[in-house]
Image 1 (cartoon, rainbow, N blue to C red):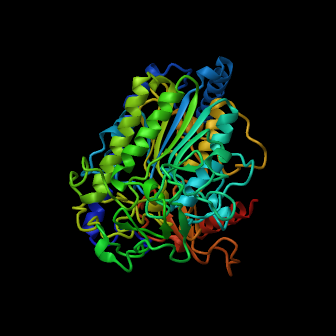
Image 2 (cartoon, protein in one colour):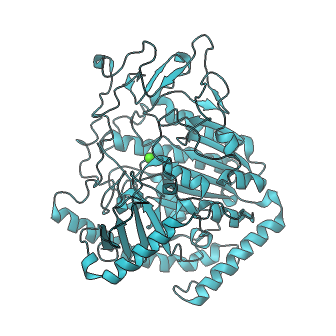
Image 3 (spheres, rainbow, N blue to C red):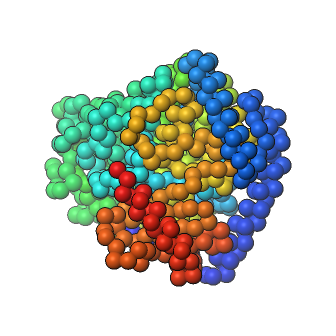
Length: 553
Ligand SMILES: [Ca+2]
């Protein structure tokens, strides 16, 4: 079931008011905190800096000059001096799921530490409120809704990227980086039918990764095997893998026919082939020696990610580490199972935090913290029941995964795409909290600016260079942001205003802005009151801008 409206605004009005008040108190504290820490930031920053003058020409000039200085310094210092880049992309982690974003119950000391010593964005976004388009946007620098096929993909879908398409890893590889991809992929593989028993290509390598260790789609979709550098790991050729999303293959039991075999029952869907006691989406047979164990997945991925750092740190590297946590099926390791205060969903949040800790410890081990830009974020907003009856709904104990925001995963409301977004680079990014609007889609252009690599014309044009905002040099991020939901409907953000257009792109509206809702996020961050009728001029302006951006090709 698709819950487009999340749980944060349904039910008790009093709870909402309390939450709103807490959020505004936190914002006020954050503002004071920023002022306090800015002076420290100036002292700790070894790069040329200018004072922060919000909203003035001088601020933009300072940011521009700083950006130029960083780029020039890095370019002049040679490739060995370029910073490593680690992108930690968690899965389905909501705006309110992490301690530093107000969560009271799940314990996330490593992620909180990144925020306390780095820069925490309160208006950072994924491209879409579901994972395939969100991930495609990060790597391609393009809004995924421009492509009708960039939707949640089955596990046997074709690779979304075109041959020779500019991507975040291909750009960094061009700039001399060693590039690695560990974790969830879910952007398709191959061209046409995939032979899971041979070389699986094109895939991460053709997209620009020197090394890859991936979950092909999601943890709840077949095939439930890891693929390392284009080959299924641990496959016995005498037990070949067959996969289908259309019909039963082989004689493996399914959740639908043999539910008594399950260690966790589905709540909706998820009743095809049973792997490791959990029924999945899609059918598979064979590959028994290669099948993953869910409870070991977090440790396996952490081991591969840290091993990549161990093998790469002598030259600049880019690690794209896409955890499976906290996506379903939530099957934490014994060290975390039942240990949190808010059910299995919080168990895997704490497991995710452990994973982040493993990466940080490895960077510390190699003394790389002063030369590594770390970005922590999530691919889309939260969902509590996402197809398995795992007790998450019953055990929230007041935890609010979206915080004060409306909606979550799948949704067009803010909870869908506004996600935790933290940048950390010791001695380079001042401790701060920012309300600049930044998007994961901007990673490509921003990282290109960081490493001094030009981008080809006509590609990745939805990616904006927000490096000064990411680096704490400017409070100005994007002027305009487009958000998208599971159906590729879009909303436009500009300043305090958000216009949700419930028509699908390409649909000719009968009247401008007719099927829209307008929210004033400055006074109504929970999107409770549609003020479209009170501000027809804002509706007309945003609607026209949205059509213009949608029409760009
Ligand atoms: Ca996701």
